[in-house]
Length: 423
Image 1 (cartoon, rainbow, N blue to C red):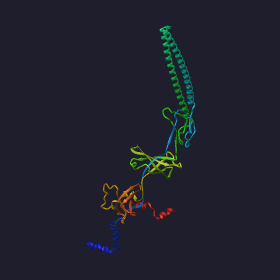
Image 2: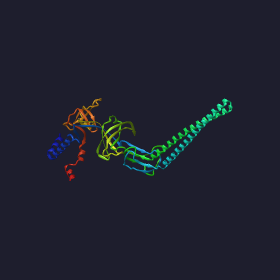
Image 3: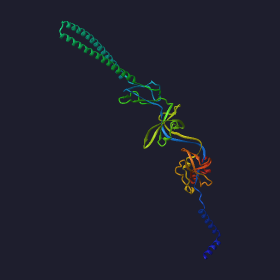
Image 4: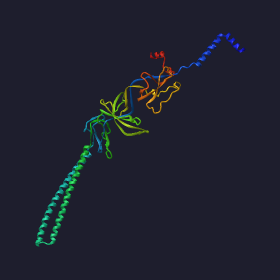
């Protein structure tokens, strides 16, 4: 009791100090009991209508629609080259020439062999004529001896000798006939060798098989071409560079959405701000695997009237696998967003299993830190937007993410600082 009176007496005797102590205690109590200002805020975006485009991203190389590799079927030293890189050539135009000296000598030798074979045929035919004359003479002699033997003017032995001579003449005739056949076969063989040598002589001039543009040249004058085991590649000709193709590598997880005829847009590093349009022309079923990643080649056809696209360029491809215009949509980030634990309602539940077309989004409410949970039905999905079939209305604001106010205050200058920086 005495202590209580002493405190009252101290307060009555020191009113200023007492008031200061009470004020400090009130401030401390207010700081402890009053709610603190939030250090974050939620970023929202209104639900609107627009386009939802589903794409499959890939990369690939630009190739000519038809690339022809021109080689040499004979060996030799290249004496002349008539074209260079980017040369426009026509079908039948000479590209290069291999030294024809050795092949021309083969042609001359083959012609001589044909002449020899024809001379041998003439000799064989002359021998055949002699054999036929001989057999006629021997036949007449045999018949004469046979008549004499019937009259008793010649012996049996003389008749037998005449018969043996006829048989020998017949054998000689068959031999002469075989010699003619052999000589004719020799002529055909030598003529075939001559045709082969002449063909090789024409092959010393490398001819363009089709019209187009020379995109690769692998030979220079003086180089030696060896065509012993395989045809060496000398030139590459793009038949028509006004139409190109893109060989895009699509991941196995996305290949199921790709169809022939789907529209495609892509860019190349040479023209990063200019998109090009293409169409899916072919989906190759042969898979390629690199580092345990399986992919499939999708062939895209693109028009190249200005010749800007060149073989070998890298294309960044977006295949449009689905598109809807004028639908209700929200950003894809809204489906992944979840409020901070303190801002969620106590009855928050997860959508039932099997409701694959239903999900949860959070809407801004009157209290910016107490968002409203809403179950929505979704349609087509893309990387940027998701189609909403039902559950929200246009104009309602969906939450996308939270943003720190402290970081924002540190990073964003005030109006005076911004004006100074502007000056």
